[in-house]
Structure formats: C-alpha cells, structure tokens
Amino acid sequence: MSYFRPEIEAMAGYVPGEQPRTDDCIKLNTNENPYACSPAVVEAIRRAASDRLRRYPNPMAEPFRQRAAEVLGVEPDWILCGNGSDDILTIVTRALVGQGQLVRLPYPSYILYKTLAGLQGARSEEVYFEPDWSLHDVFASGRNDLRVVFLANPNSPSGTMIAPERVLEMAERLPCPLLVDEAYVDFAETDCMDLVARCERIMVSRTLSKSYALAGLRFGYVVAQPHLIEQLVKVKDSYNCDALSIAGATAAIGEQAWLAENRAKIVATRARLAQAMRKLGFKVVDSQANFVWATHGERPVSPIFERLKQARIFVRYMNYAGWGDGLRVSVGADEQIDRFLEELERIV
Figure 1 (tube, rainbow, N blue to C red):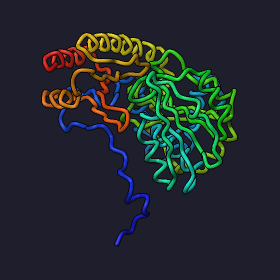
Figure 2 (tube, rainbow, N blue to C red; figure 1 turned 30 degrees about the vertical axis):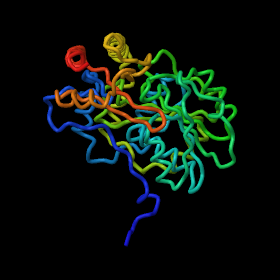
Figure 3 (cartoon, rainbow, N blue to C red; figure 1 turned 90 degrees about the horizontal axis):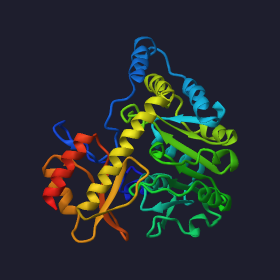
C-alpha cells in the first residue's frame, strides 16, 4: 500500500550535481564560486551568531530588502527573499499553479522547473531551443491553462541569453507571469531587472550562491511588482530565511566593489577556458555564466567525463533526450582550470 500521492510516486525527483566526499579533488560540476566570499560577510555572520540566534529572524528579511532596494533601484516592497532561489521558484509555482494546469519551460534548461510542476500535480510543456539557442515565438503563445513560464537567463547548461527586449516582447504576449531566473546574471553583459517596472507579468529571481560565493548560505530573492509580492508572501514559510543568512546576505549585497573584482576574474578565466577547449576540438558555446557548455563532433563525451572523474576532476555530464549530451564545466580558479586542461589534453 502506498501512502503517497500518485504524482510523487511517478516522478523521478531532482538530482543535484555530485558532491564528492573528500577535498582531494577539483570540483567543477556545480557552478560554485572558486573564491572565498567577502570578509564583510563573514564578520556579519559572526556578529549575528553571537547575539541573534535565541530569537526568531525577521520574517520578511527586512534588512536585506532595505539594502538590496538601494542597490537595485527599487522599493523594498518589490522584493521577496527565500532560502536560495530554488525556494523562490517553489513559492512562485505553489502560488500560481494548480493541479492539472500548465507550466512552460525552455529545453534544455534547469530541470527543477519540471520537478516543481510535478509536485503540484501540474503538467509541463517544454519548448525546444533553436540550434542557435534562441526561442521560437511559440514560447510566448497563449493558452487558457498556462499559469507560469520559466526562463533561465543566462540559461543552464548553455550559458546563453535571450536579449531583454526579446524577453519583454514575449512577456507582453503571454497571458501569465514570466519568471526570469537570473541565477548567473552577474557574469553576463546585460539583465532583465529594468523590465519588472515595464511589465507586471515579468518577475526576476536571483541568488547569492554564484557571484557572491555564498552557495552554502542559501539565500535568494525575487523582484516583482508589489501586488504580486503581496500574494507570494502568503505562500512562503513563516521564517524561510534564518538570522545568519539574512545577516550574511545583507552584507554581501552591499559589497559591489568586491563583486566587480570577483566577476572580472571569473570572466577572464571563462574566456581562457573556452578558447583552450576549442583548441582541443570541442565546440564551446559563448557563455554569459560562470560555466561553459562543451560538445565534441568527433567523439563521445561520456567517456571523457569518466576519465576526468577517475583523475579526481569533477565536471557535469548532461544528456538531454532529443537534444544531445555535453559537458558543463564550471569556471574554477586558474590553477584548477590549468589542471583540468592538462588532464583533458591527455585524454583527447
């Protein structure tokens, strides 16, 4: 006898990237920042740990909302915080999508979107990217049962972007909200934040995991017009961000000089990584994220992934039915990328 909903039993569930149990490896498979976070973040967390843990945290993470509003150029009531941007995606899905209704997502992209639809007993519609990683007009077509559209921008695994004006054009045609997932946007040349004020259907989510080197802290947020935030608040857990994450995130969002310096290092290494892999025969898509997506026209990449793993170098092998497979390689520190490239040259 099963005690679980049929939708839960039928779904595969989301599988994160492999987490090695030891530190004697090069980990380039989960798009973590290779550099330590700002010292100001560590100090803010230390202070919070010393005097705030006996009390419940601020339920709306108001200190972060106030500071982030200054950085982003919006009012605080345009921001909702979450336990990582995955929490934001969950809140949005729970608030908008009912059983049997429809969620639309690009393919291939972040696989959690489909999982969240399944948890709601909803259906998901995948619209394939074009060969150049653009999206056909069908992505913005209307349907009565369509409740939300997800768009990772930059996309994973490709690292490619849909231009903001194209995003606005699609949102204005849609009958429902368009959630622009900007998890990697700090490594890109443009973003969609200004579109939120221009179109009420556009919501933009971001995370501090990647560019702020805070994957272990779990903090993300969404920016949307206040009447949408008001409804999303009803769905979130009472205290979905703890006192330490609020303190650290508030300090981090104010460290814009640190962010610019960190971004510059990663973007430079990204260019060097892509160029070196192309010289080794890989096809590498121009990336706007902190990773590159690589395929090979003359040999399968799965054995390359296995050989790298044997050498204690972890990258992400991803195989998308109907699309193909490839290697997603996170941009590590220069010495990590040097070691990766040495081993890759040996293999190919």
